Length: 325
Image 1 (cartoon, rainbow, N blue to C red):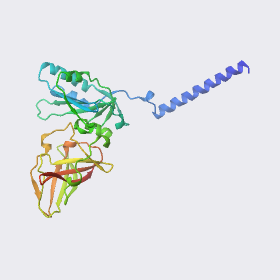
Image 2 (image 1 turned 45 degrees about the vertical axis):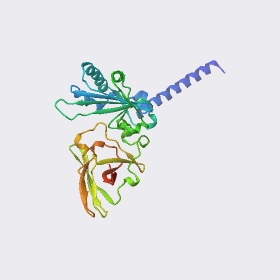
Image 3 (image 1 turned 90 degrees about the horizontal axis):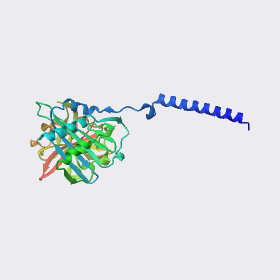
Image 4 (image 1 turned 30 degrees about the vertical axis):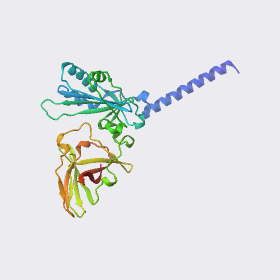
């Protein structure tokens, strides 16, 4: 074959290749389907920004670590000057975390250790503290709102402070057995049953002959409430709400009930709802309003089960009513 023909062929092939690459690049950019050309820059995490705004108040910090077997935790308050300096470092790191929001997170991305970091600032002149908790595992940071970010915070200030304090170590069967890591269970605004505890309200723990009907859902003082009708179909008076926390909440996932821990960032005292030993006569119906704000103000859309406690023969049982968010 003539060398001249070879050169023409190569030149023609190069031109065709360049045109194909150019076409592919234009297509990718138009579709926004390539992270190389369309990657979002790292951004401040909105859920943490308000912490910085009130960072001149009194702080408590928490650092929890679970390695798959042992759960360790330490809290730190600015009692001494050196503590205040450590906490200032931790607050700065916490408020400066940057990440990129993602939507494809699943529990198979969990690796150990898993960290939970909390900052609890108290606004000057206010008695009620607020708290913001984030959970980090395998390059993913999950906020208490369920949003997931690709992020790699610097844990050195937290771990340095923890080295100076006594860390409480306990064995723990699963990451599901503490409310500290609850943000993981709701990551992506959906419940992940494989890292949740099955409900303990089953079988003989459910009250017979008591009907619970949810008639309305509303907000009051920024917290969610349920309007409830309770009917006693028994032949005797029924007592309820006589335990220290008389309202519980389960979440329904794939037809199964799972125990829902309190939101780690909500701990208003009045929301614990101390019992008042109410009762319903046989055949009667009463109306109640129950706040379930301790379990979160923005729960993922799902089916839930309200639990109303009762003492029967010195054993706690529950009347149940199902509702959907």
